[in-house]
Image 1 (cartoon, rainbow, N blue to C red):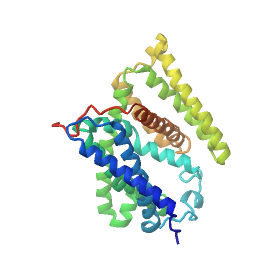
Image 2: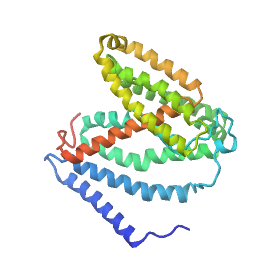
Image 3: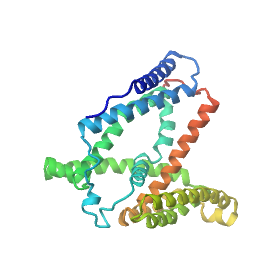
Image 4: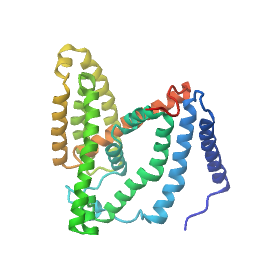
Length: 316
């Protein structure tokens, strides 16, 4: 039985709720006038904090009845290939980077074409009540079903025929999603030696981290993480140097078609190699860059408190 929150905790979360509601109310009240971006950031932080503390806690404890003592498939059937025990923070970074991708940066920019209000509401409501719930339940189901994929679980639950149809539909959705994400990556890296050089350097770095964290405990994983993040910063700096060096800049200035084929080749290689060797450490490493970028943007907004240039709604 869970302990009831203290009076101080109730007061604290009440203040968080008031701050979030007040910020959203202020944004809604400012019709036709420029809105300070700081209000949106405060509202978003409060909504996410309340959603994590109460909605996710209720979902995990009441609906899914998550048991931290229950062994995972990696602990039960660890075979060094499909089931490998991994540090929980590495798993978090892997899933965060795999699910988010360029979405946290690209998505809001594209959504702003409709005005800042629809995108804001979609990010808040969709993440707290939709996306996070969906992804958490899928991961929970997979852990309870010996690490099986969505397609395997569908065939078991609804039958081979209906399950196969559902898998084909999922494949179509994933194909369109991957095509859009690949297009974003290609356009970002095309004719950009700085970006491409940095990305290429992170691949052997991820391999080294994967080998270094293989079967490691918390202390060794922490050391590998620190060294990996420092090396990542060095890769970004080296990318600037490469872009300013004519020979290296020419070598890493690629067109869109070459990048598209390279991305497909990387996807094939990454899907063939063990997850612990390339995908998990690379996603784990890139999650620091993604979270760091978002955090830096948040700090800048808090310090400068700029006014939004887009209206709440557009005629797009």
